[in-house]
Length: 97
Length: 120
Image 1: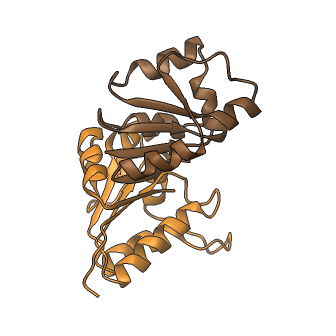
Image 2: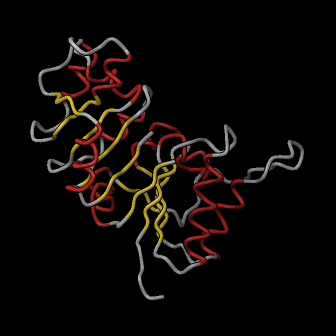
């Protein structure tokens, strides 16, 4: 069970999603939170992954970018202490950029 | 020192765009020098590092192709090229024969098994 972090707005997330498994979690940080926005492109992006995959987005990064209220339903908002908890509960953390 | 830490390195950047490709290879060679089990996967633009015949004498760049060849000298044998990335690049024939291709599901398994995964 790995925690995958994505902090950029480029192809890093596509690469990550090609390789995640059901038991993993993805944490969107910094510019990675743009992938949490409820829009056609993102709906398509997340369609290819299992519904078991947990998707988290960092609260302060969403707020900084003015995105707090237009998110996909499957995204759970987390804060820094939650981030620490997530790293403790997964076998390893993989940073995709 | 008997604790070993298996490291999977996923290298996704083209060889001469920035320092990332060299940083990944430096890490692989260093870990191998310290006898840590290392595997390297070249993915997306990373497979461009595998293209044979890189000639950097005129451009004064540090030759990444030569660093890739050094992997086997340092006994890093588990070197893979991501299948989809190879297919998309159209460069299949220009890649060295000793590099195996790897599909998504097998790569996901490698990721799961490794103690650490670092993406460049």
